[in-house]
Image (cartoon, rainbow, N blue to C red; front, side, top):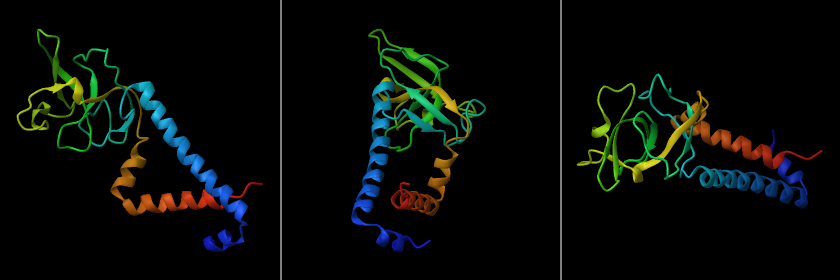
Length: 177
């Protein structure tokens, strides 16, 4: 496959058309993502489970669908995705205890189903409870193992770049019949 030869054989109009086609695909994906953010109320409406800490409920590579409506109270037993200050990657764990103050403020404690102890060791130093502001979303559904593609691409960056290059070349070089 002669990539540059195919590009040279295209006239300018075909090349512009292919570049615009590629830009439309990328912008459509971004619009869908932003639409999901608005509809679900979550900054990250879809996440991948990265560890086995929630087994048997969720396995590594499961794709979770999240919502984060602020009117819904958080309940014990619910699975939440939360961010901790100082950590880039959100954590998927179950709420095990709720602490409600007289003023209506709710704090809660989480734990992975497959972990021996609660998550206080994961929270930032001096923090014993999570608050609603720490929650990225709550699990509402999942697709088993669909997120393994993401895990593979993060574990093997060369594979990710090769896959992106092949997909980009395909979109640019594909000719309409």
